Image (tube, rainbow, N blue to C red; front, side, top):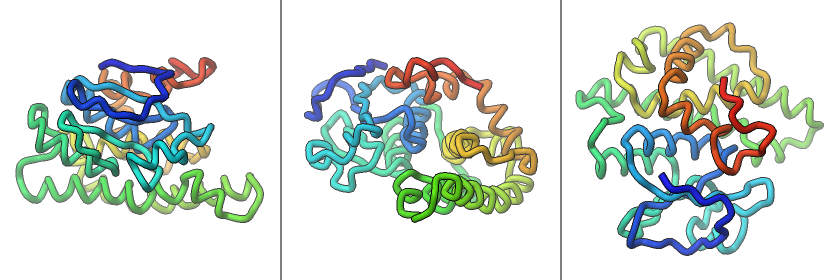
Length: 232
């Protein structure tokens, strides 16, 4: 894939490759990077500096009025937002190396685990939510940990029955693309992972795969130098 670190232009160029607006510290952007890498889709990355508030700019709002990442521009110039919607688009448009099972029940289970993470766990620990909690930093971190731990307890129980090598049996799916970034976020908030052996095992197995290591936040061009390459 082609990546440009300093390109501030937000004007999509439709005639060539798809474009992903992404940030190294966006958990949701990692999901899409994983799918693009897994399917070997050539694309251009345009990095958005969230710490500088570039996602809140009026220029970016012209692409995504909700001012959130990721944002994907297809080869035909269609703007698609929300990471799971982008994954669905990629699965339909690029069917090679599928990220969803063909059978109805495993397919639904994959979406169900993905949604458990993307809707019920991940949003509650984001910066935008934590800023709304009118308490000190330590209390906010405690709140984030509690929210993640509550979600992980239920997720762990589900994976006890659903998982094989990966989240749902032995096929990589959208569930796995949500799990790994969620564990990364949990570690950022110093969540103790020992109570969740299924989550840890699956995450560690996935992180042996080159697609997961290549797309890791600390391997992105916009990652600060002091963090770059520290993939565990």
